[in-house]
Image 1: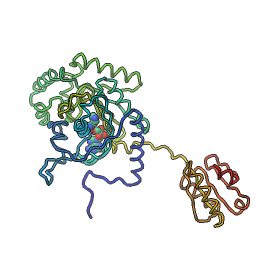
Image 2: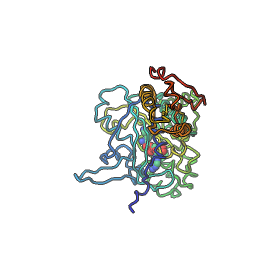
Image 3: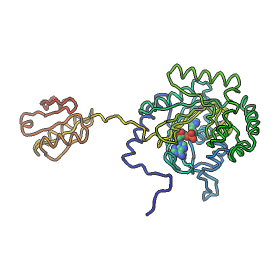
Length: 406
Ligand code: HAM
């Protein structure tokens, strides 16, 4: 029997309900913040990810689904959404147009990682990218959006925050850090040895415990920020305080993608095991020019849908609409007419088979209808409808003409 590939799952109807509930909730909230949907291709030129996510990142270095297509092009299944949205932004000349452009998207991402709980090779993200706002208020807005989405889904979280500096303060910090790493001699792992040369700040989130204890004494980026980065970081913390969003400053939070500067953040859950990051994002003010666009400030985030699935609390479904049925064939026309009127303002589902009252009540319950409308011989002769409100548990006889007029 042919099986799905490792780390690639089907979503069947049970789970789809949660999936759909997540997408609908996140979409509603994101639209309230003024964001618009964007769809970009799953397949892009490999160079796009090399130049954005970065050659030194694990994603580009080890995890890309990369191949040569029949036309000889070096292509790759997208490992994340930001790069494609930036490409679309530049290609559609929105950078030249100026102003503010705010997008959201959702869909599959592909990373050839070692599959485990919460870590898949094909997974889904819901992401947001905002272009044209340099103010740190937009960074705060991103965090508030994630917080709103998680709250609406009943999901608790911890927020980790850091600043990665910018082109003014990062180079000097990098040199300082490299000197520190060199002072550790060969006590560091092979991966860190490599990171020292390619992207030294990545050593700070090395998973090796021996490395971690060494780096406890490493110089911290937030102690080496330039005036602007420091003041932005302080403003961000103040805004979050004002909105009662709690956070921990994590000086070792560097994110696994190379395009970030200034604000970086990650939302984690303590209830889903070791793959605890449920959302991540930050500012990436240089990326648009790295991809040949006009320099444009930008910030965004993405939520990992699979990691959220088991945490989502779906509210009890509320009863809605009407169920209508007849107790005898002759009453069916009245039922159909009532349904026709009701459908103009509400959901109305008709059972065509004549049934006993108890069976109709069961039918109404099954589809979670608020009202059960039944017509039997008595009702037909008296030109009335029997209606039960299944929430209030009240019954009434309503003149058919009243009903028919709406
Ligand atoms: P990321 O941190 O690589 O950021 O991914 C965002 C989220 O996707 C993670 O927090 C996690 O929940 C989920 N995720 C990542 N890899 C996997 C996997 N293998 N299996 C299941 N879930 C996974 C980005 O991708 C950036 N593009 C976010 C961003 C948008 N930054 C600015 N704008």
